[in-house]
Length: 349
Ligand SMILES: [Zn+2]
Ligand SMILES: [Zn+2]
Image (cartoon, rainbow, N blue to C red; front, side, top):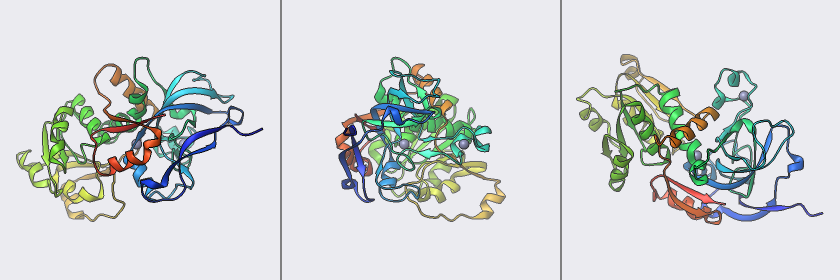
């Protein structure tokens, strides 16, 4: 008997968008599911800058050939023998990286740091395909009334925002928060979560035409900095004091300016990095101002569920800016790379 196949966007080598090709590949089978596995019929998958970094060959754990896509939503097709929480027909969405739930870090609640964690599109096949398999601890139920396209992006945008703003940033009412790369998917939702907490938001973008979108998303001030020099303006907007928190979504490109924007006792939380290269900073600045530099990685499953709750209560809005068919994955990558979109592109499967 022939193995049933599925459509998938397969990446057989690293390189430009043209390395993404739609193919017929063997589909994962219900009979081969392990105990905690859930087989999902994919309906929507978000296109994330992480996918571009991965496609370019800049993530060390990716094994080729690979299927990208970690922002996945769809319906449960079948479950492994040990799965209790889900059954066929349930609408579900994934987090980006599935934890084991058993190691010491998982037991301490730091599941995003799980030693055995597997990232869709890196260690395991992702969602640019008709079907995907995830262990159940990486899934949350999509509430009724939430469109599957919106559900797909909640983990990597709103969930990531909750993780960086609250869990890692400890952002408080009335603090001033500066956000770099604010017009991307994570940025727009991070603005919303900061506003929900009652923080004042300074949003940085390199493109003047995105300023309006940032204001609409809730930014109190927009700093347009085509040259990525924004520290001086950040100080001006805080009466010379500097900001309490920088949420660094751009990473290495803006790290120095981010450090120079901080008030004494400020926190710099690094959550995104568009260019994988080292940075330098003045240790003296960190000592004299007792600055803190922290990292923030991905999303926990409870944060995904909470994202759904906040969307249901209309406190945060998932910003899908464009829907495209799965076969348009290469074009979606090009548009995202050219910064031709505010918010997320979602591929419909
Ligand atoms: Zn993502
Ligand atoms: Zn673990």
